[in-house]
Amino acid sequence: MIKLSDVSYSYLDNIAALCDVNLEIKKGERVLIIGSNGSGKSTLMKIISALIYPLSGRYFYKDREPNLKTLKKNDVHFLVRSEIAYLFEDSDSQLFSPKVYEELIFGPKQLGLSDSECKKRVEAVVDMIDISDLLSRPSYTLSGGEKKGCYIINTDIKS
Image (cartoon, rainbow, N blue to C red):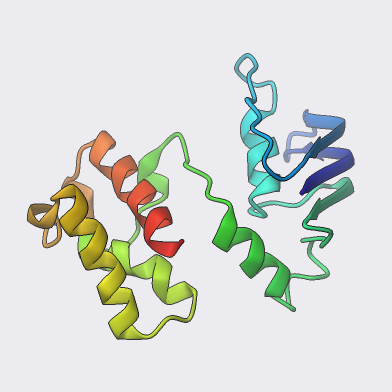
């Protein structure tokens, strides 16, 4: 379950991106977040993904609260980031490994899986969608769609 209570967030220019947002998403529910440019959709998703934290209000994921105080404990952040993926609009912001293979194996390694299990997961997805020709390519040479695909594949490999 995802629950936000009176969540607010503003950026450095003190313009509110979110103001007193209340939201509850129950297990199994599907939610579509729509709105005009600048309405706070990305900010909301960054909070839900525990990439940023509310400046006021509270956010809970499965009755646990990811925030700056719990960041050092890491377990709640690990839980959120292993179960929720956020695809940036600018895919260049998301890929940082020099080669595609290294990018794909990064996610499973963050879960603490053995090298052999990481390799097995990557190979299974690579074989399933036939992208072996991309593995040795530098990440920066991928098209925008290939970069987004890489990130989506990475989230699938983690699960």
